[in-house]
Length: 186
Image 1 (cartoon, rainbow, N blue to C red):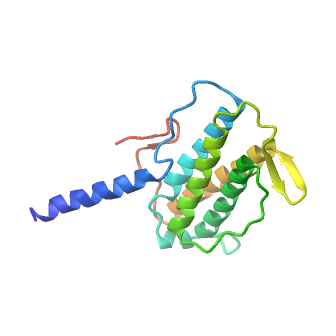
Image 2: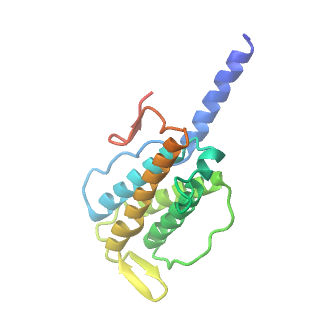
């Protein structure tokens, strides 16, 4: 037993360090000034933090859960959030949408979603004018306002669904996570 305990501690610490390698374990430090870009960036950071914790520790049972036969499963909802994160990133990159996502495991989808949000946030953070950032679908170009009320707000909505679904499948939201401060209480 004495030999197992130190190994167990190292394993837990290793898992915590790996988890912190992904963006949004906590919300990054806020900008010192309020600009169009810093506000959009912070909105995306809030989404990233919520997504990180809504999806942390999900099991196959959680991913397969859906409250009614007509509903999406949590896994299908996570697919949708990944697509929304790509639209947000493409707006930040000034790139058209439409590229298909490759097949990925849940872990890969989670990482890709978090990375997409972090990249978009980083690009927008220091911008003062967002008029050049468009949501592009084919020949249609929409102002960044549509990214806010479209994919960003929609993704927040769906993150809330994942939290509700995980609770319904018996896996509550992790304790100690403060969406108000963007920190994890130990």
